[in-house]
Image (cartoon, rainbow, N blue to C red; front, side, top):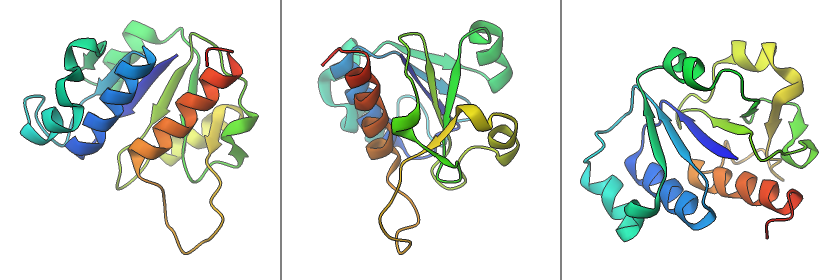
Length: 150
């Protein structure tokens, strides 16, 4: 599996996700524009000393990402999707795509990929969304569980 962050905005979230990717041997793709610079001190601090273990790939745009990995299956994660993340049947070569913290993935993507769009259910409507790094962790570990890699 691969984690794809489309236009991530918060360096601490990306750093925490990088740490998760290091711990699970999951490649991390960052799709520009980013809301921070790669040498951001908050990004580095959140990833601690695990950066040498992160297989991080930087893409100049979504089109650049698609040129390199367009043949791969993409699963999209959003609070606006209808199906639960546990309904996805994860594969080793999946690209798990997450959107920016403030806006999420473009609705047009979710509309054109309804069969490949998933959400993490929340028990109350009082909470608008989960933290991005928490959401990525939940999904990655469910994928690893399904693939028998835990």
